[in-house]
Length: 150
Picture: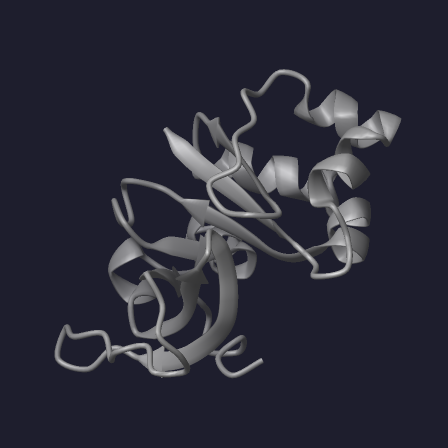
């Protein structure tokens, strides 16, 4: 199963905004929604293609209410997420799963919330440590070279 995690913008209640809009509510109605982190909405789809299609369907809302849309597929990584752009590139066979692991956006997790992303580059298979603040854990998101540092 491919997971999707939508990360809400700081000033909005993502779940409320998506489920109070008829089109978004209908697009999400067939999924079992969870909240792995504060102000996020997560669900499972059958494939990277289905995940990217759902994100495309929700694009109008994501541009307004979300900071990020993440995709995790076991064919790429069991533990690391892909940015929406990178997931689309994988789906379109523009990059192979093995080519996705160099550029990362690391989120700290503090009090159940994703905080302050740090852009890092994997070196010799090692992910640099998150050092922006003390956090309980980190969440690694693979990004495209073009997204690196944005």
